[in-house]
Amino acid sequence: MKSKIIIDGFWGMGKTSTIGALEQRFDYIVIGEPDHLKSNNPIEDADVNDWYIKQHEKKQNVFFSSENNVAMERSIVSSIAYLHTTKDVRNIKFALKVFAEFRKRYLGDGVIFIFLYANKDKLGDIINNIKNIDVKSKFKNNSFIAEYERFYREILPSKYNVHPLFINIFNKAGKRRSVDEIINLIQKQEERGCSSNFHKAKTAH
Image 1 (tube, one colour):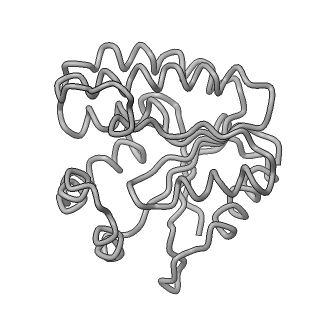
Image 2: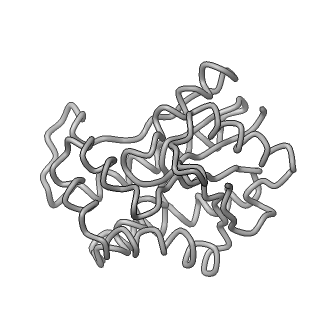
């Protein structure tokens, strides 16, 4: 596998495990997800979204500038999806500015953009394993989950011409896919030559 890959999706979907496996199996350089709770500098609640946008800007510059195989966990898209879903307009102008650069480089760089998700009936077990109280409360909010995912499935492709590949982390039999199974689906997508630049949004089964 030779490519730039973004792994996005809901919390608890296996994003970190997936990019970790890409690093081990295919020598990908990994750009981890920003986490304000692990920041060395205290961040006020009012500044959290601004902090994430700045982190995504730094990380996407590294991602697109790399000449190696590189996998990035989340992107500026996740911040915009969050701002859209929470109807928070305070940081949207800054976020869209960073996203404009992301989109320009994304469309010309053969990026594979993955969105990991699970059907509603499978979210219960995932919620129980989440320790962050704020994240857990959002997961229990069905309207938040639905609108966040709608941003990726409808708004992102139609308004911005960015087309993720949606991978259900559970197979048709209801069994959770292993990391190897998810990577195999990504690899098949790459082998078809269907990078994000060319394919329409679809779901891998």
